[in-house]
Amino acid sequence: MNKAYATSVESSRIAHSIGTALDRFIKINQDQFPYASGELSQLLRDIALASKVVNREVNKAGLIDIMGAAGSANLTGDEQQKLDVLANIRFSRALTKGGEACAIISEESETFLDLKNQGKYVIAIDPLDGSSNIDVNVSIGTIFSVYRRKTPVGTPISQEDIMQKGSEQVAAGYVLYGSSTMLVLTTGYGVHGFTYEASLGEYFLSHPEMRIPDDGKIYSINEGLCDTFEPSLRAYLRHCHSNEYTARYVGSLVADFHRNLLKGGIYIYPATRKSPQGKLRLMFECNALAFLVEQAGGKASDGHRRVLDILPTELHQRTPFFVGSRNMVEVAEAFIREEAAEPLPSENY
Ligand code: AFP
Image (cartoon, rainbow, N blue to C red):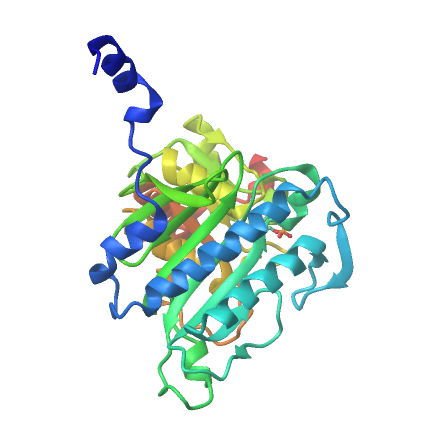
């Protein structure tokens, strides 16, 4: 081969490897997966496949009549969007057909779905989080948790299989439908991010071994609700102001979480007057992100205790949520502990 030609090929895009596809990554790392029998790998492939379909639908949301409200409300009173409904169907169908999941609990459904099969895994999923952002073209996401069923295969699904603590997750992740689409995943061996290459129809490993910085300068909270927060939290916000932290709040949990994971920061959805237990759901939103953040070196708390240690008593249970850089979450917790010492915020705001 002519040397000049070889050099030009070398410096061209052809010379660069396309990278590790999700399937390959799962295969290579299968022995690291809990209960490495191949079933969890297949389950993750099923979720990835459904997310590609949802990604396609999210991307054409403005083109066809799937934007806007579906005209119904889900159990927790949120207006269901058409895309919420579509995403719920896509994920449920993929998981049902895949055969590895024995039960699905979804933020969009009142009770769990017993698939009455030989599957060993229970899936908790928020098929499309941040749906109020769909109509305005802002990033949205899917959040999922994977648990191992506790009762023997072949018997009906019981409460014991469904109401598990977050610490019992065997895998968790999210898909961010943003400026690019990413799947971020943990099976308890670190956190890995995969970016979707639409023309190849594949996720490729783009962010191996993700670590959240121990400290950050970003705080993410709906500060418009400030007057309804506990005094201790308002004191923490004054701490953020006096340190000139940067306020960033998309209002799409996955997008806010992802940014803080990469840059360092804290996301808070606290107790408010309207929602004394916070707005976010323990089993559909908080547990997965808590598992991911811990695997990335960060922390997730309800202000007092580790989120992953909370034993759920209701399917749609809510919890206050403080998640992000370890030191920032610990400082926020310290403010919460000192609640009684704080002056009334109305005197200061
Ligand atoms: P929607 O799905 O109703 O848009 O709610 C999104 C969400 O659960 C979470 O993604 C956001 O961080 C949070 O609610 C935003 O809530 P506020 O609008 O009360 O700030």
